[in-house]
Amino acid sequence: MINISENLSAKAIFLDKDGTLIKDIPYNADPALVVFEPYVFEELENFQASGYKLAIISNQPGLELRKFNQEQLDALIASFHAAFREKGLELAGFYYCPHAPGGQGVSCECRKPEPGLLIRAARELNVDLKRSWMVGDILNDVEAGNRAGCRTVLINNGNETEWVAGPFRDAEYIASDFREAADYIASKTVTADASTEI
Image (cartoon, rainbow, N blue to C red):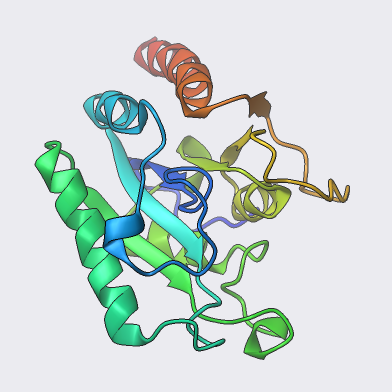
């Protein structure tokens, strides 16, 4: 667990992109092909209303593999900011690792399951990791979140196929879809907020 500061009050929902927020199309950088999962924006609105910052945490190995270029990825990121704004939401950050497994990603600190992107996001957004959540669809997301010190929810939608066990790879909760994941976090948020007021 990483301790960045003892004096942080902000909290965040860190969101994996492919398979969590949107349908998983490998190496897609075309905004026209992006399809958001059901109920995503409705639940993100609830998160934001509860005081959570919203940030995307994503491995983007297609950059190093030359499946798309930086300009295309920048356009995709801009489209996510625009989609959030259209729904009255603020996307606080889009953090990505450009490295491929077997390439520079062998030793990088940003490719999930490494916690580097979460730690960077927490510093830049002034977020308390202990009050924040990582939501993803594979155990590498869970491990990254746990190693950073977040609470974690795994959306078990079939995208995790290996189920390799290990330290930090147990999610606090396993949900069947984004709505169930959000409902669980909301239930824990109410409890935590009530405890804070006492």
